[in-house]
Length: 155
Image (cartoon, rainbow, N blue to C red; front, side, top):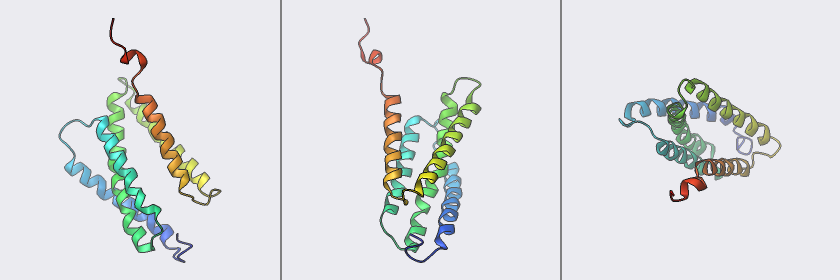
């Protein structure tokens, strides 16, 4: 988009605004977080909001609109990471929460590195993140689906 609109400065401004919005989103989340314990359902809701915030950016937009719209997923990013870390720490076996959050962080970084590596050869086509999101949704639904023995009636 920056090259097409001859606005190369946008390439630096987009991550800067995303990060600034993340800081603001984190502050607001801490200020207004629910009093009840966070649950996996809240994580799924926040992750859905985060994903939906990216959808307007799929459209061809002028640079100014991109700069405004990138703040939406930026603001949702820190709350998603916070709730994911807290949820994971709450369900990890005793004494392993630090390791569990470390593995999550490593998986996120691996996904970012893989996505960045694929973005160049594929020309930044939006199908790559769409396919990655679909794969993650499939894996998540397969992991959280009830097992056959849980569905059978006792006895």
